[in-house]
Image (cartoon, rainbow, N blue to C red; front, side):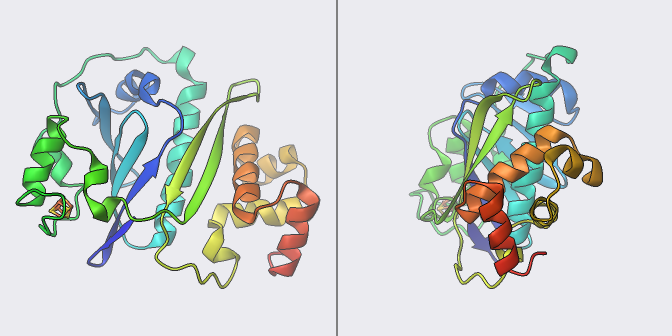
Length: 242
Ligand code: SF4
């Protein structure tokens, strides 16, 4: 993740192949640009432009680091929803050929620093458009990773179907409270969990699905480095989440 003036771009690594979801995303997002060679799909999600590749997502621009985490959570929730509804969606396999350099340029830092070996960000976007470069060649999108989170994807029966791993570099690791580590929604889930609520009760209180609660709980465990509710509750108590 990098800071671009007052704005940030983010690069998320994804463990499993996202490509099977692309036709379903293409069918449900009228503004989506689904392209081939390489396969990728670009759309605006909650006012953030993002491009999904087989194993990574790049997105821009964010006002601050918290909004990157929030975006990651919400995008994952959305991908889970589309995954769960696949049988009710008529997939759209139509592609538009390649994304144009301008489509890709919008996601780049636009500093023209030349660290990628190209004369400008636009030139680099042209290589990306042709599949002749990868986003990892732009150092502003590939700084060392300090924060790693593994998100589960559940099938409609609640069984673990796959996982998504988000790698988010943090400029600062001086966390001063739960809000620095967890998203607002995760703090809400943790507070309820720590007070003894079950997953169905948390889902009912927050008006979200039990699958989403499971996803939040697993994500909270991963971020806190704990393995069970009791330890998470202790962490919540020690960090004034209750
Ligand atoms: S490395 Fe290339 S794409 Fe990245 S900011 Fe610099 S010129 Fe732009």
